[in-house]
Amino acid sequence: MKRKATDSNDLSAAKRQRDSVPNYCDVQPRRDGNNALLWPAAPQAIQDAQNLLKECASSHEKVLIVPDKDADGLDAGVIIHRTLTALGAEASSIHVHLVAKGNSIHDEQEREAMKVKNPKYIVVVDQGSRPAPSVVDTPGVKCLIIDHHLSDEFPEDALVRRALLEDLSADWLATSSLLAYEICKPLHPTIATTCGYLCAMGTQGDLGNTLKWEDPFPDMSEVFKTHTKKAINEAISLLNAPRRTAKFDVQTAWEAILAANSPKDVLTNRRLLSARAEINEEVERQTHTAPKFSKDGKIAVFRINSAAQVHPVIATRWAGHLKSPKLEIILVANSGYLPDKVNFSCRIARCARNRDPPVDIISSLKAVADLDTTDLVQRMGESFARGHKEASGGIIPSKEFEELMALMKVGEKPDPPVEGEKKPVKKTVEKSPQKNKLNNYFAKKP
Picture (cartoon, rainbow, N blue to C red):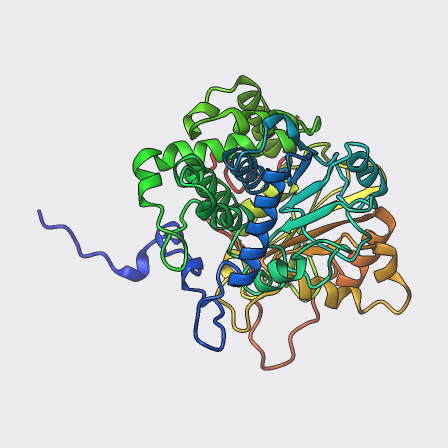
């Protein structure tokens, strides 16, 4: 018996081709007047950073590494640590400072904590940047900033800060771990073999495990011959888990990756495994919150209350599933992470990734805030709309967050269409690999 031909129009929604996502390797990096590649940063900026690291190692003075809490920051910090020891620095002279939950390196509490460690050199990695006093106010301390977050404002007196950060601001895809690797690799012949997998972990931790590692990214074929992509991706997941827990146990993640000689060494760490199980459970509990939409339909807002840092995970998850012709941004707001504050994460909805002009989260958030006629922007502080154009967020007081939501007109019905206009298409959710059905997805969990 012959089978009937299948009409392509009859394919179910779950079978339809997913919205394509731009390939990071397709982004054209900048070039100088002689058409020389300025990636991952200008050659002089990289040389300045290399010179300072060699000075750190040869001085035998105390060095303080200040990495961010995620896989990109921690891996970059270990790359710096291994480079300094390879160049002759004693391990006992290299210290680490891990910023406390909810803080930034610019908070007075953190500046004082770094100062009392009495370093002569400070290497700040992946912490973002904003206008601020010197990282520490001790005379004679030299500071190197290695970062990839969008910013044109920096702490005072940080060496080579402008060369590194400004050259990266347009090409944010060069992650901090990749930048650290490219800075350090020429300094010692062992760095390529001892730190290649760290570069891969940190970069894929930020850009995703589908990264193709094509030009201008470095050739990592030897790394993936030695270390499987499965082990690398699993290690990324485990490394990111402790900082998301309510305990904010970044120390465990730092110690695990510093002691590891390969991604596989991370996979059996019981504390990391326990942290990931805790986070997976909390994500499952919190992710069923139903969204409300801004009046213009461009922003979907999910409100949760959790002591764990699960709001970025939930934002990323929903960005891949929620669809609408108008939808641009997924915003997940967590009112339980810090007292009297709202921590929120924003991601571009997958259905909006190819819009023209491209969606810019930072500009969109600032445009909403600028609708205010009072001093809301000042009251929200320096932690509003930081990060990347594609992945931003903030930490702002609860009262000010509600004012921001009012400016977005969240929950208000859209104006009725003008006569002759097409009715808006109803928002839909792509089929997810999760076991939940749509009719019970938003049900409250015990």
